[in-house]
Length: 193
Image (cartoon, rainbow, N blue to C red):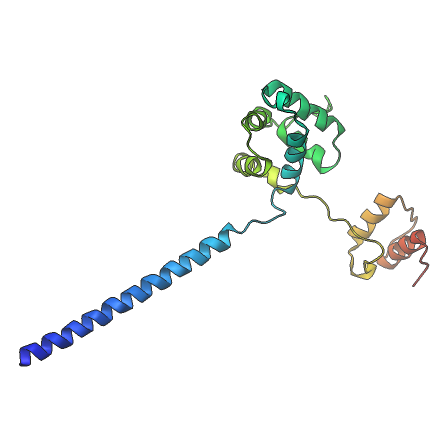
C-alpha cells in the first residue's frame, strides 16, 4: 500500500511538471510570435525616395519597353534628366548621371533594369537594393511645412531659414529667431501677430 501511495503521488507530480512545461512552451511561442510581428512592422518612411522613384519609372514603362533592358535604362535616364532634389540624388546612387559633369556613384543601373524587366515591384526592389547599398534607403523627402497652421516659435532657426530660401524671402541683417519669424509673417501679410 505504501508503495502504491508513493507511486500515485509521484505520477501527479510528473503530470504537474509536464503541465508546467507545456505552459512555459506556450508562453515562449506567444512571445516569439509577438516579437516576430513587431519586427515585421514596416516603416512607411523607409526607402521612401527609392520606392517613389522606382515606382514612377515602373509606371512609365510600356509592356514593350519592359521586355528590353536597354529600353528600361533609356526610360530611367529620361526620368533622371527631369529629376530634382532627392530624386536626382537617387538617380546618382543608381548610377544614372543626367549631367556628364556630375558623374555617378557606381550605381546599380543594370540590377534595377534587370529586376524591372522581370516584373519585380519597387518596394521589393528597394529592399534588395538596401542590402547592397544602404544609402539608397537613407534618402528621405523633406516634410512640407504648412505656413498657415505652423507655430513659427516652435520651429528651429534652420527650418525658418529653409522656409525663407524656398519662398525667396530676403532678410538682410536677420540674426535672431524673432527677426526670421517677423520676416516670414511680413511676407505672408500677417504683420506681427
